Image (cartoon, rainbow, N blue to C red):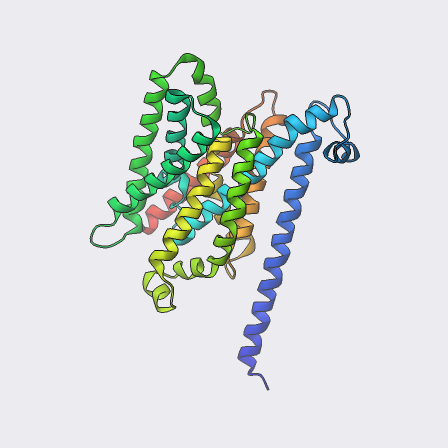
Length: 343
């Protein structure tokens, strides 16, 4: 006969698992609906049957160009970039045990942006070089922040403060490159820095897709170890986790996802910052929220893009809408953390 306490724990765990699976499937369904809306809505509203025919290879005058050349790349860019930002932000926040320790705040996204702007303004580089430089910029930024923050002992608060300082320096470098750059390059840089799906192209999207398909199996394999890292250094080590190796692997995967997403769409503000906390609030913390955080990232990007396109008389880039949503939450979080004296 099973002990009543053990029986209750098993029942509770089963309920949490059902909730996790159900909520994740619901988020995936919302993602599919938003993808369909991105393909259907525009100056001309196309029915689902016509979209399917075009995607299957039928040539329909007018519809084929709009769907294949404009709406499909835009939807795919929002889908994969949103997923990458959501997963990358969740990895950083969970691994460093602080909602402020996300790529937007500590400068990882800005490092990738600075490298990309350098390629655009100074070298007029190709998309391949832009992608590689974004990854290199993100990795170098993480390395600098980690080295500067690790003195006698590793401190998350010190890492966040140093990251904010590095972000300010990189933002200044971006402004300087824009000042010395050619006038013809400024509209491209400004549109890219605002975070937009307008300039998405299939070669960049394919690179991002390949990165996701390579990185996600590793991230999912390390998901249990990531959850253990959230318990703290000593607890994770006691549970048999090689903390240094796990951190290195997860950081490389997260930076690659964020850097390639940034190179594809520009730095879409606050998606990496919001996805993880929203997923934890909706799903709970009983299981790893890597996939829910990715789906939340997609919902934020696609939903904000639809709002930016159709809710106002003037069309706004997706980064403007996510910035309007994310900035008040950042202020609230800073006030709450300051009251608790975490930093």
